[in-house]
Image 1 (cartoon, rainbow, N blue to C red):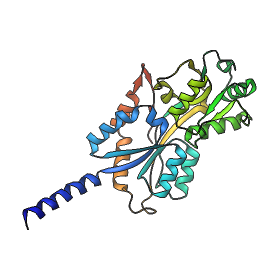
Image 2: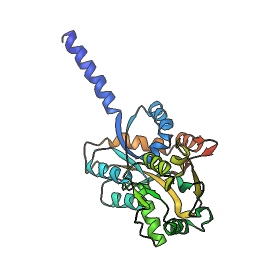
Image 3: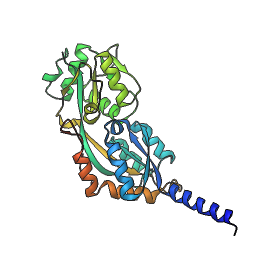
Length: 264
């Protein structure tokens, strides 16, 4: 064998190994905007050798990427849609990893009186009744799905000039709300990590219906033989480990914990 061939084979082997340790995971914009990914990914690489490439999209798009076999796993937050995804055979299973909550953010003047609401339904009824500006992500994300379910529970069909569906991720939607001085539903982590708050403030939280669970779903290799199921399984083992718990529970902004580990 010539020295050139030996070097070429060695280079291909190195590239093959590097490729084998890369996997793609679709994650929500709310998870990415929280800043937690920047904490977890280097530690995942250090502990497992896996280079996780994130595709940052809404939950609906993440599920579609998984269904098409374009990613190896997804991390999303829309339980009903996730369970349908598993039932359809698109994922092998669903593992809960961590949670936080949704909050209603709005102008500090709070013309709708949301701070005095009895529950989330009452808060949305006040916003609708006052016809004050509300920004919806409108992007089929987990946050958008939750928002729509909350309007439905409140008996309100959101429509009219006061309701603004922007079709954007969490950060962009918060920027729009800040620019319009409008109300918006956000996950707590994205809100805390948002740097352009303007005159907005967290006005309502604490209703149990605002619970926000994140779950990990490995794409089913029986549907897509090319997916890196071994790496997806290895990543899952890390995500439910004590090391992950330490990092997730320890992630704070301004002294406030953004997520709570509850892997099961």
